[in-house]
Amino acid sequence: MNGRQFLYVLYQTTRATYLAQEKNSALGLVWHLLNPLLMTVVLFLVFRNVGFLREIEHYQLYILVGLIHYNFFINSTTRSAANFLSSRSLILNTRVPLELLVLRQTCIEGVTLVVEVLLVLLLGVFLGVHLSATLLLYPLVFVGVLALSLGASLFLCGLVVFLTDLSYVWSLFCRVLFFLTPVFFAAEVVGDGLPRLALEINPLTGLLSLAREALLYGGHVSLAEVGLALLGPALVLAFGVIVFRATRARVADYI
Image 1: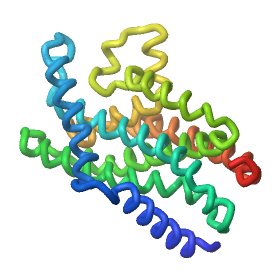
Image 2: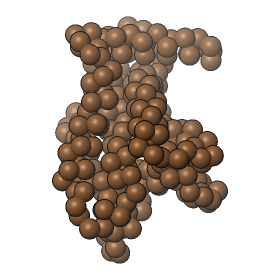
Image 3: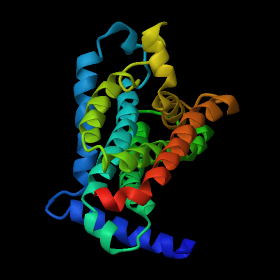
């Protein structure tokens, strides 16, 4: 299958999967937007009077930016594994590249993320955020979260066929990850020690910092900061590709 055929099949399978997911939904994409908005309202009301959090400029948008990127990672990885397991007929009866079955869910969630980012920009303008040239860095953030999510999804899909309990382990990991990701707090307030180390090695930390500078604050971002933010996702993607390629030949025997 050449590149053009791969893109065509990716488009068709992505479209079919998205329509199947939204088949019985009256509001469709609106539900994806309501989730981070409602969570933002709850977190803002709970934490707005905490001393060190009141100092965060545009705190409600700060939370929203964190949530939409965190949700993208969680949804794309969890749903990729679930859809991969449910694609038994495609895996056994067609010659569709298995990587495509993983990539399709990342693409679906990517469309949702784009819409949510546009919503953040509109809300930001309404609330007085001054957009700057730093906004041009956001495509790098988008590429970074895509790479991170795709790498983790390939890792999950490469192993979940053989270890079905991995889905439950991943669900538990995602709950813990929420508190190890600066979604509603700033990484600087954690201090030193193990919690700070966990934040620093979390690839989402650097991506969220870069996303907030691009979408909200427009501060100076050095090339070193950009490179460091993209390093983690690149490593996760490489590791995911290695694991998936090592296991894909045996997937049909176990699914």
